[in-house]
Image (cartoon, rainbow over the protein chains, first blue to last red):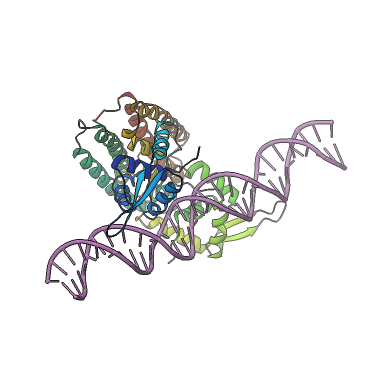
Length: 181
Length: 181
DNA sequence: AGTCTCACCATCTCATTGATATGGTCTCGA
DNA sequence: TCGAGACCATATCAATGAGATGGTGAGACT
């Protein structure tokens, strides 16, 4: 059984959920919903679907009229691969790349005032994301269907994550040497 | 002024803090302390120092005896570049790549039981990291010096982060449809 | 003394992704 | 009808990812 990168399952999953799609539509959906926990450059979304089609997990269909965009459909093989991935509770470790934590790590090499300036900006940034996730969540009606519930579940993590980080940076701005949680 | 990637400042910072180093020592320090918020493949730590040396930010010195390892020293130009980076409160956005969140995002396409299995593993994983950070923090004496305080500050974020995630996944395992925080 | 073994250390290669520039196409309003 | 701007797609080159491979030296053991 072939091993695919997570980005490929993003493509399979989006098409499974929303129906046949062009790379351009994939790009829009990834930017809106997926970027925060799995960033994908838009160019990738033009490279990946043809590869999946070559492997039989998608089927390409050229638009008849006008722009003749390339529309990708899920095949049975694609659905099977997706199901297998979803059913597997094993996952690779999460990876984070946060330049702000890097600067904090090396803070002892710089001026004490730098920490505060950094912390103020970070707190602001995380507060913004927190508000964003909270408002997205507010717009949902999770009693509706399993898709809304799925979305609400993940947005809850977004809220908790951003809240923890916002509070951390705020506390650093207020007192860089605070020790307790 | 040239723009360097964060990985380069990791190299400059580690050498600034601990003195002249070989790539192998860099590798060990990165794995121990930096991996969680800025992963770097070990091969990079053999590519980057010669590049920084070419640009004058490091100076290479071959070991005299025995293994003749390549030892890299910080130059004045390197120290200046590092200081400028540390003093700049602007940073790029943090990036996260978490396959578990991806599976959670697409959970509505799979079986309800999959969510629970996934959540149990994730909770376990985050609990482990939480214990790890807590114990590292316990081993510090932050009244000592600014380096220990710096370390303690960042470990506090690690603790808060892992706690938030562990609690989230535990709550998902217990009740996948829980809505409140 | 020889040699064995393991930890230590370094580099190379090929595939994949990152970053971004470039360029075509359609719609709509002036 | 002809611009302007949104929509859409691909190409290019650099950087990083992933991991295989191989040398070196110190101490253990015969």
